[in-house]
Length: 446
Image (cartoon, rainbow, N blue to C red; front, top):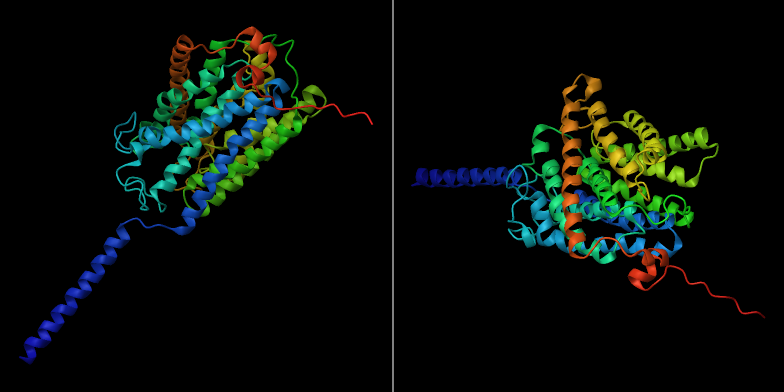
């Protein structure tokens, strides 16, 4: 009996230890929430959100005073519409696994367990699926807002309300899926875009080009176009964009780790390099640097470093920033005049061309020493990476421009895109909203 009892106790102990180790193994395999990662991602999402009101101030300061409120509206209403569209179907079409082209419908309305507090069972993250979803929502918000700078002062507000959800569904969702979804074709071929050079900047810039070609030039352009009416607002908007861009790029690490720190450093460095370079270019060609110029240059540097921010080091970010300052300066001051299009606030010159340069430069400077999940670039002997980057660039340009053209034709046929000449002359604030940005009162004489 004693031997049987000892044997029984030993068996129970052995089974208990096996069960303990098995449960530990299962727990190690299952994704766990890291509170630090989650806190950083939620903070980053908030940083990216503030970029859209910052963008509204940046754009608003550069238009005529009679169009200030409308310009603010064009950006702010995007937050409201995309916040709903993203929950209902936008996130699912962008990130749910289905095929190489577009996401499935299983995450529409945040079903299939997304509403809980667990990490995604598809994307290897240490944050709740809801946190990842909301962070991506902020990217979907700012992208259509960016394109408004091209067509301000001549676009009907009700047409914009209809255009936003159509564009986010037919243009943004497929490109986001190609680049970032687990089964997207650009991700599979190794085309790198850490935080949105193709998905956000080329996508919005190419779409903006399509829209301005469709609606035409502003009344009186270029003779009657006035300089920015409020430079302090424009600079404040630039500061908010720069501030929020740290969440944009460093937050794309989806973790509070060394890669986030690296992305933070190169983001700031590229912006500074591009802003200073733009000022030098103005000094050379126009004899005086301007506040508008340095702010435009800083934004160009932020755009260009975005796709590369998780793959390059500080010295490469200086080269990318200087390149953005030179290229975007020429696109804004020379290319626009040579081709004759009316890009009111230089969305094509800064976002489309800056995003194109940044995506290409990623293929030059990317390094596995910065991010082992990426690839070495051309300067490290991997010339083939440039071809992969061009695949992403051309795909984003082609799809965004082509589909936006179709959507513009449809919206124009339904309700029209452009207000009347009299409405443009009066100003978009009064004719579209019956409100104005500034009320001036005469002081009573003592």
